[in-house]
Length: 106
Image (cartoon, rainbow, N blue to C red; front, side, top):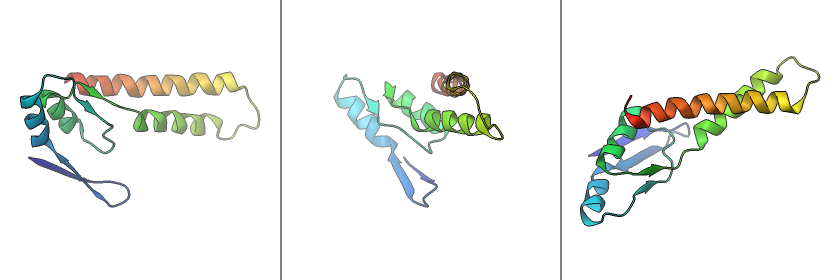
């Protein structure tokens, strides 16, 4: 089964899910998925069911931090770095918690 999804750059990403099954059948080593930007929650759950043990996750978490920093600083002429850092950390934490719910199937 192949999964296709358009990215922001109008490029079709192809994730051949059957390859995960084939690799899992031939090895009992841990399987890592290097990212997955643009992958739906359903596909994340599917790759985990098929045997992916670890998903490298950064892009959306990083963007959540950036977006929060931008929002936090709008209209402010001065402030403190630690206030921005705390807001960014909380936004990234919220994003990771939501992602963990997806990965755990909840």
